[in-house]
Image (cartoon, rainbow, N blue to C red; front, side):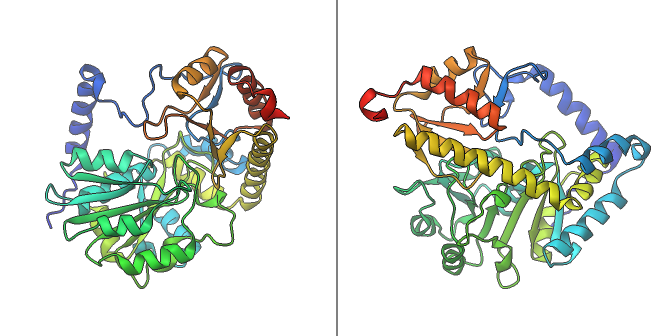
Amino acid sequence: MTNPKISRRDFSSSISKSLAAALVLPQLSNKFVATANPPTFASPAGPIRIDFNENAYGPSPKARAAIEASPKIANRYPDAAAAELKAVLAKKHNVTPENIVLGCGSSEILKATDAAFLTPDQNLVAPAPTFEAVLEYARIGQSAGITVPLNADHRHDLPKMAAACTSKTGIVYVCNPNNPTGTIVTRDEMAGFVQTISPTTLILVDEAYFEFAGDPRYSSATEFISAHSNVVVARTFSKIYGMAGMRLGYGIGEKQTIARIANYIIQDSTNAAALAAALASLDDMENLAITKQKITATRKWLSAELTKDNRSFIPSYANFLMIDVGTDTQPVIDQFRERSILVGRKFPSMPTFLRVTIGTQPEIEAFYAALRQIVPVAPAQAA
């Protein structure tokens, strides 16, 4: 395989061309994160942002301090810091640094994996709905995307996904917990699925919301990597670590598999501030536990209120919740926006379900008060 890495000079040239193209081709923005009226960055007094599954509490105090100190190393390429982070992550996951690849968010891991393991003659199998980025990257690479509807419980239909895989399938994608439904694939289900899939098909497991799951039946797919070289797990610092704006993710897999993916990662795609913040975050497990407790408590509060009002929703293992509002969600989304509350976009395959990020307790209380106004509960339901 030809190594597609380029020199920094060529890389800079390509970036300049890309930026120029972005100015004249705004219609090429990623449709899977686009909204009819994209929100602007909010000031502290701005709208409530519970639309993109971000962590409202932000980075840990240690990570913030590392970010503030990052100008001191801004003049150096981040190679040393990247190597240090890979070593720390390798220890965390009980692998070697060669089993780790870093990326500009887990999105770059997904994109590079598609590039490494798909061709126009190969397809990608994924559940629907799920995080569409991996399907979009496949489409851009001229690979077909085959989607398998979720089952009646809004969970991955693994038997049908396995049946959809053929000798032409380069990747099968599992989002666990799944975005947007917040449902999980259990450890036993994943173990059976891994055994079913051909070794020639890569199993890409997106664990962006891993830390929120908190169910004894659930575990990371990293445990299958040592025996199955076709398993790759993608993780991110965007969610539980509150670093969505810093853009840092990583992939874990067998050495040769990771080396193949690394060929498609942009050289030095991680930055000094993000790397410093990540290292500090991994050294602040107390803050992670506090953040998880806050988000989980607010999710449980919202679930209890929904149950009290007899509203239908999907029990979630992530930092968001899908609520069935019983009608087309777009007018509901628009009415929330009028109240300065930004909620998730409409999902065509689940047109009556509204995805709501679990923000701070006051934010979610404000959201639910607005929901009661926008979609009132019938008296018989509330009784």
